[in-house]
Image (cartoon, helix red, strand yellow):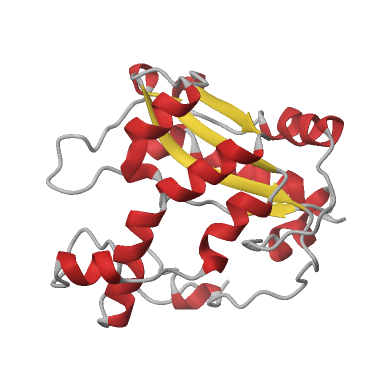
Amino acid sequence: MEFYDVLRSTFAAREFTDDPLPDDVLYRILDNARFAPSGGNRQGAHITVVRDAGTRRRLAEFGAPAARRYFAQLTAGENPWNPVHPSAVPQDVIDDTEIPQTFVAPMINAPVVLVVSVDLTVVAALDQGLDRVGLAGGASVYPLVWSILLAARYEGYGGTITTMAIPREDAIRELLAIPGTHAIAALVPLGKPPRQLTKLRRRPVPDFVTLDRFDGGAFTG
């Protein structure tokens, strides 16, 4: 595939066939994705390759509480898990909310789940003193995650970045023997999608890119 075709067709794959993801292909994906940049080139990311079906099911279960809140907030017309607008949905409503089986299915049905963590002792979190949720530290790990998905698309596979299990970070650490200095950044199910999308719906560049200032004119190229 041409590089720009990969960029324009790498979608969030959540359905997978029964096809395996062989070790040699997964190694090739990771071997190419590892060239993603990280803060100070400290390369603090770690990837735990989870193939065991029971462990993958446990990881799916860890995401259920956060998913209940997500779908309860959606039903209430809220923007789920938003750090600016707190939820007004009562906890008992959240606890009674059912989540679609399709939500946990990717972790269970994918042949591989990658648990991506990052060593906080080498992360430069330049926004840690700001009065908001921290984002800057993700620069040391998320380029790698996205490069994995691009490489997987190139190889004819696919996956998606999931974060619903992160509130259960302590449980994930215990399950996978991840040290306490590592933060869980993403859980990425990978496999062979039943179909590969070729056209994705995204906003055009002038809708979200401006020139010189946030309120500047649209960048049209």
